[in-house]
Image (tube, rainbow, N blue to C red; front, side, top):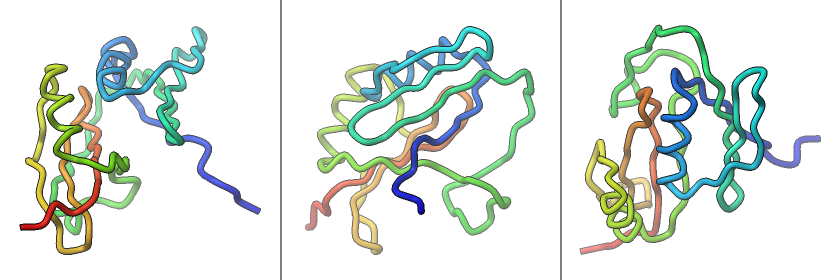
Length: 129
């Protein structure tokens, strides 16, 4: 049966702008399709398929999660050391949605939004203290 998630598809309004953002996160382009237009990006074991949509509709989602509409809500990526990852992202000019914090469910987390408002969580080991 299922062995793994092959990729998560992310609808974006501007493929080049999205590619710049995901490259700043550390993703590299695996392949591109001119017809769609789309690109598969990968880092470690994570693969995303970014595809350009003509729609400009948005769905409001917030950090509370429990009030969000049904559907895929976010992507969580394991980085190990959240604070070190945040330093690299800030140096690359990316802005955070939430500052790193230890969570009661057992990981340190921060979040950021891609240029189209798709939420990405970066997770790592608890810092403690």
